[in-house]
Image 1 (cartoon, rainbow, N blue to C red):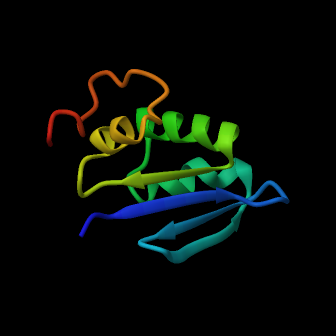
Image 2: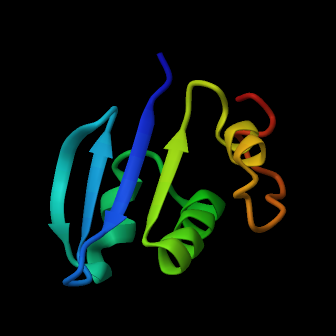
Length: 91
């Protein structure tokens, strides 16, 4: 089973984080979001790409069992070319 993280922006500007459809963190202030996502291994290029989607659409879904980049490409939602990602190298 893949690990699926969903981050949803609330109407008050804070964020909720779900892991496999279970609420893990709620009402995270914008200024704490990056630090909170680092706890789940979402950082660097992945965070920046996820943040762009959050800013544009108000939510982002990240799947890790199938490979993050492959999932984003299959969905057609990868907005920028990710270079030198450890996920793209299968590590």
